Structure formats: C-alpha cells, structure tokens
Length: 131
Image (cartoon, helix red, strand yellow):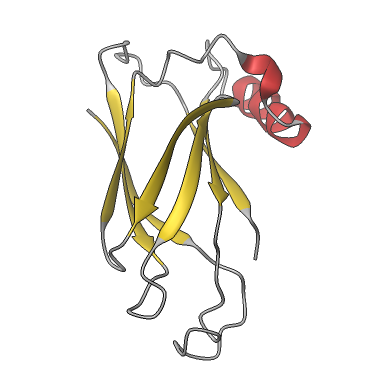
C-alpha cells in the first residue's frame, strides 16, 4: 500500500560494469487499466521509466548497475540506514545495490474489479537475475 519500494541486492563477487540486472515483474493491469508506469532509480540516481503492460511477466533491464554506485548521497535516509545495517551485518565489502521503484499510477484491485483487495498496488517481483 505504497507509492514506492526498494530492492536491496548484495554485490556478487563477479559483478562488473558489463553486467546487467534483469527483473521479471508482474503488473497490476487489465483491459480497463492497460499500463503501469514505474520510475526506476539505482543507488539514488534516476535510471529509466518503464511502461508495463503484461499482468504476468514484464522484463526490466538495468544496464551497468555499478555506474551509480559512487553516488550514494541521494538515497533516502531510511535506505541509507538499511545499507549501513546490511553491509555491517553481512560484512559486505561494498554496499548493496539499491533499486527503487516509484509507482506513477498504482491502483487498487478492488477498483479494477479484480477481487476485494483495496491496497494500492503496482508491481510484484518474480525474479532478479544478474546477467
């Protein structure tokens, strides 16, 4: 029931600037509400806007997820705290990659005639893969 969410991914040992992160997500869409628009931010830096149309599977590709890793200062305070705690707890050499989703047009399934759920929703993460 939010207009944004954050996914924290710890750095795999073999990640480089040549890699990309592939996210497979579901979208809350139907014939009367055909798209979900989502801003993607990586480590506090704007990355892209995606328009999702498939209720079951949409791919989002984040190229060079390390490119904005140095720009840690624009990350919201709560996420900074999560970064610090996770890095300390897991004894990670690098802070995790933070992928923030900002939902431009979330909807309530109940309003769309899809059951009785009245939470404000947009996407559901199926998988995240490093390529």
